[in-house]
Image (cartoon, rainbow, N blue to C red; front, side, top):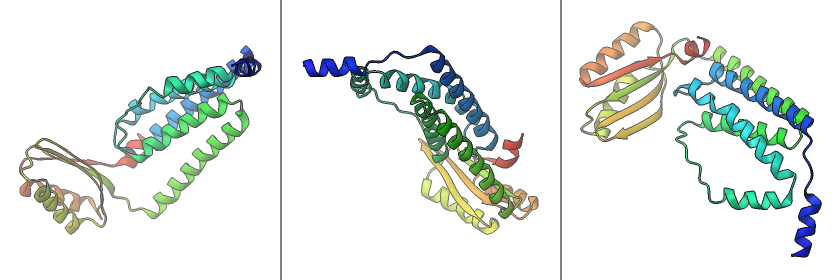
Length: 229
């Protein structure tokens, strides 16, 4: 016990106020930049603006935890025990959302560990790579890449309903990729990534789906236009 007490006292250091405020300012700036970037360039189907509002809070909270924990061995051990009884559960349905959350945590951890320059440079490089990669992807993509949200209020058979939708989409779409599938009671919700040659085909697909499934609700989303708006 005496050895542990001495070690705890030895590792307990006072946090300087000025560096703390500088680091906090950097965390806020980077998290706000990440928030704007996600709203502008993200491709998640959920409301990106609402989701991105969590970035500054998550980054600053992580920064506070790392800053306090690194100053004392006793606090770090206590923090491990406290966090072990906390379970964080969030409905993360898309990998992109999880990736941005990890990047937000990395900002708080990096700046909290006093790695200002490396953290800032790497975060900016990551955002730059994302922009360049999306620019490359847009050059190779068609102009009518869309997301199709299909909602059936009373789906008697999930398998038969999906089979009908897939059959129609395969007839008219160059690419079909189901991104999300939810079934709550009799309500079926599916999201497809589709690719049509022109808008006339899109209109024809709408008519075919409505005739095949009378109680269907359809929504087409041009994610690139939404991001630019």
